[in-house]
Length: 545
Image 1 (cartoon, rainbow, N blue to C red):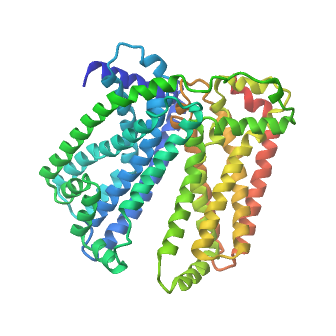
Image 2 (image 1 turned 180 degrees about the horizontal axis):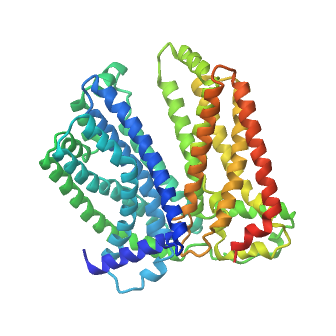
Image 3 (image 1 turned 135 degrees about the vertical axis):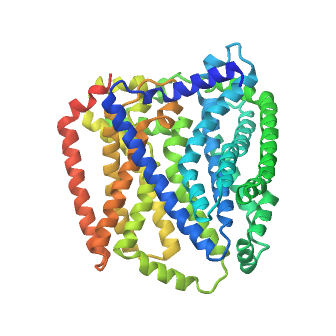
């Protein structure tokens, strides 16, 4: 690797992760334990599901299908994540102002920035993909060659999906020149790219010409599945064959495809990247910062503060895409798939299936499952965990305005509650469409999850007050490299355990009892947290400097 590329990659990575360094040994140990706990939980969860899927497929001697499913999931996730990461790292990062004037070749900047995203994708791939691949090797009694080739495939497999998503972003961003409202345009870039990815996905997997019996036969034949994937995405066949058959020749084919894709990325990047990047440096309207006298409106303090928080989220592309979009986009996707499946399904027993699911859902365990799903999505809602950090050096403003700290926290939490409520409603619509559950059950589910949302909002604001990230060079670092974002996930795990624990204790009783016990406990917790903030508000803001 070129020395300049190595140094620039190292600097960019250090700039991204410098906030994780701690001078106190106790904090470093606690942080590492938190990492181990969360990573162990995620890897254990994927290991559990992988074991059952592989074991089931082995009963029909089609365990190799698992590798295809696994690689599809990895590629799809990397493309979606790559769209967001490429948009932020290549275009929205403030380090462009310092890097572009340096005596660096365009190729060196392109490779360094791609390296930063790729390293992040490797961490995600290890987290989600290592255990399933090991589990497959153990259950199929694979030899050492399997593990070597599987490791090599996982090492280069993410590169092509990441390059595709990056090129897609570059093509879209190359049209920013001449756009008057660049901030608004940059806001919709990742959304357009994600929609495009889903459109291609649905188009390539459409089953309008395949009957259910034919589709089942294909899924039950590993060779047929490989052919289907190969027709749509050429990287799957060599990757799947290399892992299943421990074939070095197929791995070499994948490596050659990767090299060609990398060269293509450099060629396209040199042609179109810097035009969009330089144009991005001068983003914004010409009238930005000019306030017209007749545009000033006098509102109540609370309303003005809340409006400010919403504008901070909605006008900043990075904050909207990272803090808001994931928790809303995922349930919309689930709802869309469910509606599409129901509409396209011509089976006569849909009502019978709905009745069965309805009886399962309207139980304590069914309500616990809904809570678990919504809590998982709340974990992707990063508004409250970054409520203070998003203000950066301007957070000191909170100490000079004539508004109590307690009220400011409440105002800052409103957007989190608002978008979390949207997420909850979408999930409940999804439940209704899929199961036909009663409106009373859905209303109770909504109330319980609303209480959980308030608790999550208050606790995550406290987390951000405890460890605010007020010094950052790019908005991307506030969200993407922020330890505080682990805590919503940890809180979700705790709430899921509590929900299933109570559901197990009252499994033979109506869901009304479960709802009453669960809601009472969490209302008391909410009152306690609220009193704590009200009493300790001055002490809580000591880290805002």
